[in-house]
Image (cartoon, rainbow, N blue to C red; front, side):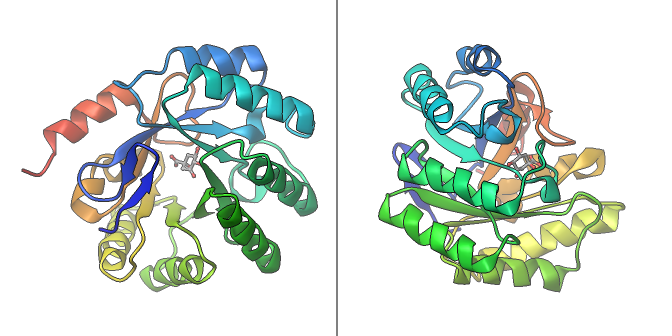
Length: 251
Ligand SMILES: O=C1C[C@@](O)(C(=O)O)C[C@@H](O)[C@@H]1O
């Protein structure tokens, strides 16, 4: 698996790293989760700003990002606005989504930003370029909350993300059968050798839980585990996730 170094964190190769999502609505809720985070239960922090009540207020966004950085000084921070189209919390016009992502990037509020591949292509490409000018890494993502696409479609998405210039390629799906889980794992395993970029994949819900602990075998470099509230169905609490991945580790 290819490797990406983000500050002190190596993504790709070896055991998957654990991302803890923060989904607080208010600054108090956000910081109270941040205070519970340590190096035992997290390798990376994902601030899900689509849960933050003042996300549309640029100054407040900057202020809270600064507080989060101060609280979690030695952690790599990913900022994600997950749109309503892909399971996020706050319905907004696409233009507002682009504006928020642009603010995150230009103000360098995070080390990594999540950009959704299926939003308007020209804007996503522009934002990816801007991120690189500002030394912010891009996780490009796609989420299916109802079903699992065919293996050819999952691989097509990786190919597009790669072509758009993403640094990390990410696909999340909802399985409706054990076969769907196998589809996601097979697509991951086949893509690992094909792209020189780290991949993140998961199948959501209970059926998909197995994919959240098996990244070292199949080729996913990051798994989302909870400290407090979950940000997607099927997430396992972070200490348990760490224990399970330790037990499954390859020698
Ligand atoms: O995209 C992802 C993955 C995720 O949807 C999951 O299934 O763990 C959780 C989200 O917070 C994150 O942005």
